[in-house]
Length: 165
Length: 165
Image 1: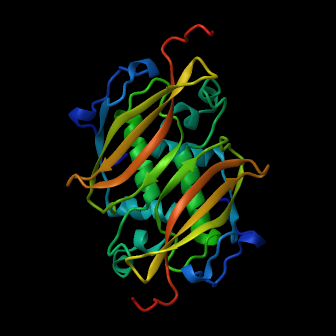
Image 2: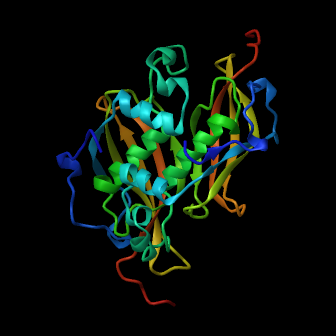
Image 3: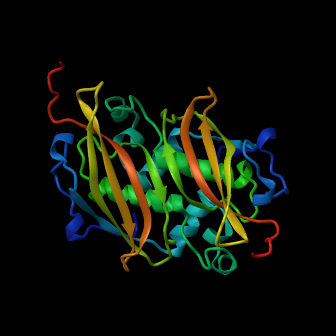
């Protein structure tokens, strides 16, 4: 991905975390992604063709007061950062669902980093081999402004399945 | 967008709905989008590079038991359908946030349609020119299986601003 690079905090690692390795309050930081106007417009043409995502001049007269990334574009970039460096989970980053919000617009030139924190671990009652991790992921720009908050329910495998009762 | 077409229920219309025109229980249906393996892999390469979204053979050994679209891809296609035919709102489809879940995987060959229902109208207390519409949007495949549920808070302009108290 153009503009994507790994910072020390989000360095790629071979360590993969199982549900048993996670604990409440545990934090992870991703690498970074530089978003520019071309990326914003290309995503918008394909998935969210509205003036505030397509054209700088037209965007000025809208609620956004200038070009801004589609929220779904921010979500997609966030996923890329989580998958590659931000959340080294065994089995990958598999979301069952969650809550999403965009407190501030994401602008051309923003350098995005994802800060994640484990909020809760919920072993599955029906499946001994997995559980749910509730994870809060804040996507922040270079000014530390939060452009997206994702509260996700992720499916995470267990390191060793306990014997069934 | 390849594979995107408008069905009678989701025909493009010049009618744009303001907050004042919406009511609880009101329903909208989008046009359709045919998703295929090439689209699924192309999105995954850019935003969600995990085996269950990239490769049919590798995907079989995963939780998904076969190639499936990234949830964020389903969200992006849903947005395209909402913007073009599914939710003809004055001011466009502008989300403040919401809840999202993926009850069933979205597979190559799925023909997606978005069924939306207005759940609540909340005029803004601080801004007389707008309000929030809470909208439930189900993205369904050709078998009427729900591949995504989005409960969105959308910012919708009012037709005429009432006088301030």
